[in-house]
Image (cartoon, rainbow, N blue to C red; front, top):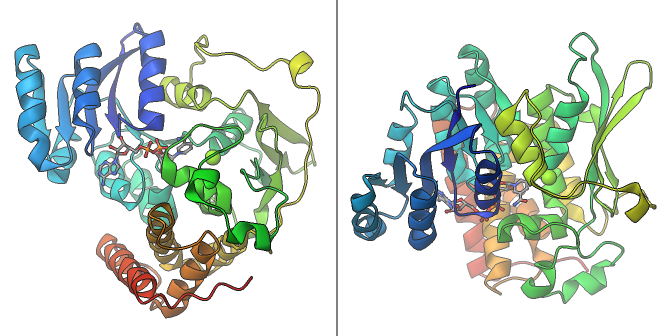
Length: 392
Ligand code: NAD
Ligand code: MG
């Protein structure tokens, strides 16, 4: 079999490094064509040498010389800046793109990859939240696949294999509940970034870890599921499952429900997307019932974790509302991590921003970009004027 040649966007992050572990376990199945990262030059250099990448792009242009000097003796081509990422995505030699950047920054490269008819394994959920309509339309126009990497969406995707003629009645996304499951609003008032970064089950990048603590992550995933599987908002439910063994479920017309299970390890969904439709041997530990006897479920507390309720409303409203919500959330999460705002200010800021943004439907890429910039500006203004009043 020919090796699948991978372009890994965001290779230095949590998903990026785990994807490289998967690739290292299966050297006969994959090779690395392109690696990109924003600012971690030293890790990018190590990865490029270790995996003999053909080309790398460092996002921050001031780091170009450092990366180029290190990789020149290895005959690895080096470029810098966002435009270079977009240009490299046209490379004939790329078979599949793994989008593992974080935030709105991932949107343009995802669109560019699809326009170049490259299948995209998508971890970057924010791109789908912001512009799921554009992305799915461009994928369809170019007859190009989008493969989910997010564990819940990978679970749904695995459950619908072989069900081509059977419509989905309902998707049930599971949520771990995060580090503050069961806590009340009063408790959340005082939580620190350090506490919020302690996820019980998953080790992930800082932004998604905070999103998991506020349940905004599950809110983003509702919208991600809507676009990936063409669902109506009322077809998507969330259930808290603290053990994170069932990664999500699909209910069909006859009421039969399929679930996909495994230990909480992103290498499984990453590997499934990279090798699809083939299943490869695992380089990771598998689930064992003897060690995990209790699987429990409860409904999410959307009054305490308001981000989930906000995201559900935003999913129903659609248009540029998810784009504005995502931007406000990115700014709010960064503000919380910088100790500028409190944990409970995150949903308040997102709601305040949504109330101020001009609502539009049928947006072009440029209009989404405009909404993103406006929402970031509005949210920063509110933070800098300290006009947030979180209801306790
Ligand atoms: P991370 O912060 O660990 O890594 C982000 C990567 O993106 C880094 O390589 C960084 O260099 C790159 N990057 C950041 N800003 C960039 C910019 N402006 N331009 C170009 N590149 C940039 O994040 P992560 O936890 O790996 O998450 C990546 C994406 O995958 C997110 O959208 C997240 O929601 C999603 N996801 C992550 C996990 C997980 O377990 N980590 C699970 C499901 C989904
Ligand atoms: Mg997930």
